[in-house]
Image 1 (spheres, one colour):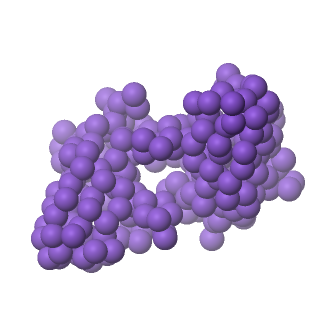
Image 2 (cartoon, chains in turn yellow, green; image 1 turned 45 degrees about the horizontal axis):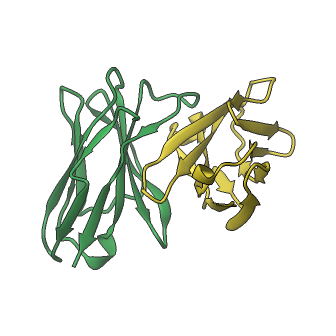
Length: 115
Length: 114
């Protein structure tokens, strides 16, 4: 069975600094996708970035980048130049063929950006 | 804006009642997923439809049911409601049922059972 683990329940980051959110996953399926979502206090779930299991390069989307270490089964999200609007809950998630391609979420990490 | 529309945004109802949550997927998306987010259980997958057919079931209670209509919109029916059903219910859609396609979520329906 697939599993996503986010070990940091919450963290503070100073505005304009970078922050790394940890995510480890467990699957024996060679075909999978890893995703990060942002959930602000208003509640909506916003898709941030995707990394495929066969991708050779780390994904980047603006200030978001994904540090993909396949052998370690980790997919950490790096947010550069943090802004106050980055304060939110962040979820790591995975889809894989063996699990019917449903999206499985980790427990989330709450980030609070300090001015 | 994800392009996924959920109505209503908020729903307050009493125990024992039945409610229907509605979802319109993004244009062109054939797959619809329902998730429940509660404080103690996190984000739980309930059910998936693809082009009108049920594709996968997760932790969905027997009191809950869903369907996807020919125009691809979906409804989640919750009956015999209990206090513990209070949660944020998300609908999400994707073009296909594939591991490399992100799900795009609606803004959710916040259900409060009193």
